[in-house]
Image 1 (cartoon, one colour):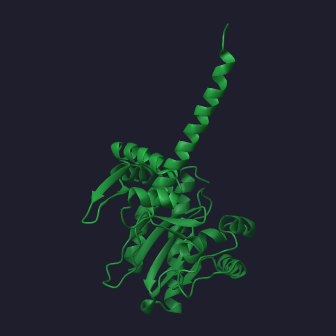
Image 2 (tube, rainbow, N blue to C red):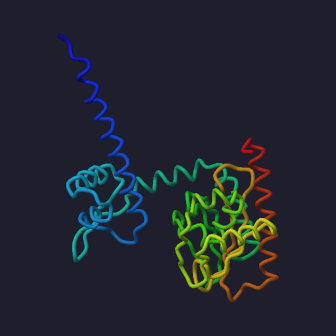
Image 3 (spheres, rainbow, N blue to C red):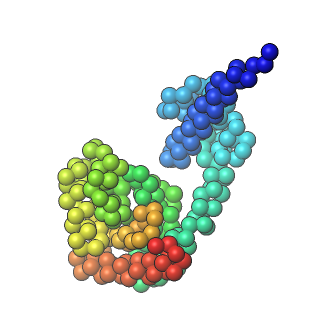
Length: 268
């Protein structure tokens, strides 16, 4: 008497377990990537609402593979992102044609404008910073590569969102917009009106909506998949309406250069 049928539920159960384990692994990595300090086992389990025993097994595996690193301080040990995560992120940047096309253009824009230039990509409701060219001014805007910020609160995000239909903007962001500073747009009607203005003038403008004391002008890169944008961030004390107009025009030239280069590679 054979028992082929009995093996099927077991296979299905294993598949479900593997998918659940993969989802938990991704949640854990994404959570730690957003932290500014190492977290302990109990903190990780509490924040993710996972059983401590399951988290412990995951942590051991990820540490052994280099995806996480352990730290020890005067209070106790913790877990943080490991070198394998960096290697994977660098691999993405090295293979992304938009990033590669934009690198020399970002340098050119920084030299011409004298301010910090960023390239970022829309990921759900956030903008992920991919490349930065920092200003040489002592007082300058700074953002960390790999940092993810709410799209509605950044010039980069508003430039990328303006390239989408309003319905998709609402689906991505929902109705609740977190207020980062007193100047952050925190209502969907106000954001949609700002995006409509962005579409009409061809660039996004942001003033102290993400960082008090900073202003930003940003332009989306058209006709490429992925919703990218490039920005120039300036301390508010150096921003004037005339300066904003000059920055917008310069960014638009740079974006056209990148778009033409990518079109030559078949990206349109």
